[in-house]
Length: 223
Image 1: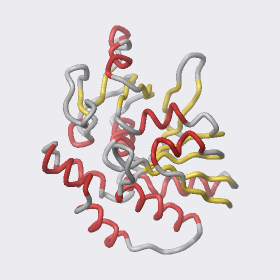
Image 2: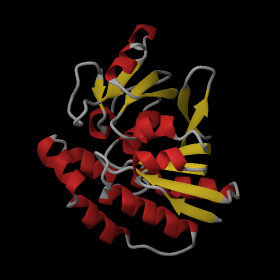
Image 3: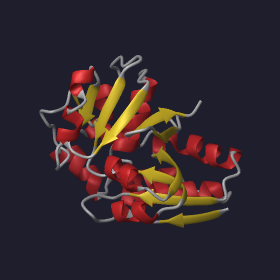
Image 4: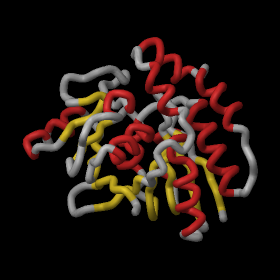
């Protein structure tokens, strides 16, 4: 198995093979939670205006403003702690995030795209192993064009698991808890629960996969 790492949104443009988009804080943690609450599919979009186009179809809009804050266009924020107990049964979700949704739509060279964070790490690793995939590109997204420790460590953990190597999640957890993005989410966005959600290893064993339809992409659960 060949495993490459191409960081940031720019890295998603060059990523090939099965591409693993990693955005721990917060979109790739939010997505498994949405599916666990019954969502049927998720449509990724780039801007709040793109999301608003879908509201007339009775879809649920989940997203954030440019700085990660609450935005009036959305029914719910891109926040796992806000939606973990909401019933989304059979609903189509439209998701907008600053990094993950843009990277999904930019990964045009990928043969397949799945989404990963710590909450579904083993599920993604097992999916790749069970399908005997040879070319894997990990895309830790970071924030505002800079690498993020939380995403880089998640990518490192996935790589180690795929290679049959051990890692100490408790060490990773402590480092992520104090990283810049965790401080932003916890202290500036006032969402400390989101950091806690993101650090619950394998709490949502769901593999979200991006599928191509005629005029847009959707994220669905691999069953």
